[in-house]
Image (cartoon, rainbow, N blue to C red):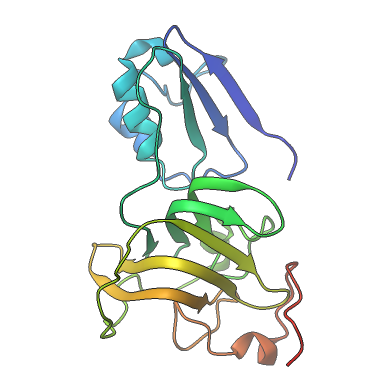
Length: 220
């Protein structure tokens, strides 16, 4: 993807909006249309229309990480959550909230990653699931799993070439309504869109000939 980031500096907060990551969850324009003004020509991001705390809260509510903020009022910046989570969005992507480290480059605190297989911006979602008619529940079955001794910390996301997302670190997989599905320290999550065990990989990517850039797993 090319750089699609808009940078708008206010008196107390600088807002960055990366259109290439946006999944149009619309929290920004619905919750604070004074700060993110919808359907206007020209300037549409107005950091000074609300307090720095409010602007920071808008960023934290953006699941894709398309909105991020840099404070210059001496206030607290956004920090990693106390519990790492990935939310399985109904008919949509995997929404991560953690100190993410992407193998192949990049770090983030929030990201929505493709699970339909159709995104042109893999491993990130680009909303192609809508046009593709992707259908997959966000209310998957609960798996018995012990409580994690540590619930935060860095989370490594490794897109396997032509295969799943290999995730390493403390993670709670939850439904769109917040029910915990499983607690893991390592897992492989489907990104081809065809697994019968979604959100987990079941190897179907090999049968369907799924193609996606990533890291080549070591030979066994």
